[in-house]
Image (cartoon, rainbow, N blue to C red; front, side, top):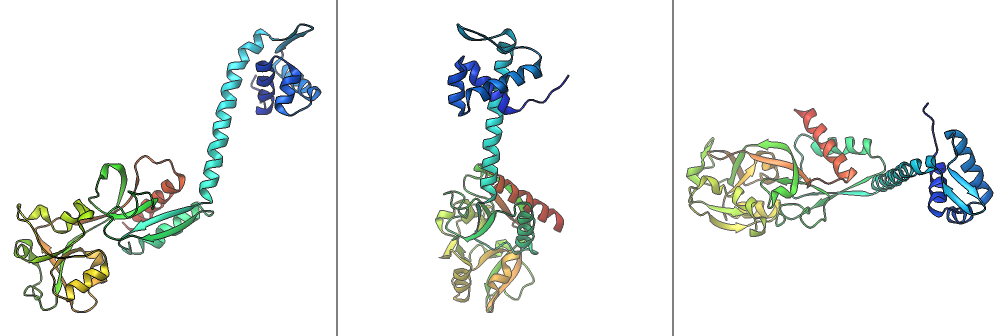
Length: 301
């Protein structure tokens, strides 16, 4: 026959079993000794066997009590762990999730779609968007100032993060309107090898080489016309004629504000834009945001 026993009853039993003294166990539990004795007798009636031998010499576990004790302790330990996990989850629901980005993930309304799904699942949590300079390609993940981040791949130390690719886009070349190639429908990358390029700061690591299309240069170093760390700096450097730059198709509207032209580039791979978060994290808000982002991405597919 299966019976339900309250954790309180097991906790009372364990205290008496460890103290082998009803008065000390009652003091430890902050209950009266008669109340404790009453609960132990009720538990014994449920089990159909005495748990303790009581006589003038003291209190001792019966064979049934000794058999029950290790299981009771395990149940209590598991319940304490479960209670702590529930407390952590409740605290997380009422906390703030910081979402880092260096480029706004507009891309068909992705950001509001993720937000609506996330807030529906975690109504007590707050989202804070954080704009990060291109000098940090992880958008705050590396130093822990962002909990999740929208990033361009590849990342420095990429194996530290779990990744969800949210967009793959062709790379275009942006140039001043008066550039010699601006009237073309498309450009072979080989035609750009001698052009000065706008480059991310050196701190961007492998992402700097990626946007310089180093893998398509056959070992020839890029000519750097200027370093840029934001969309605004990129636009200003372009209209000033300091160089050309490779950009993702989804970012082209951010820099074609007048005086700048973009053209498709043949001979280089498409860009990949992703949500990233610390690998293997158990944070329920981080995992919840990643799940919301996956749902929003798949809904657009």
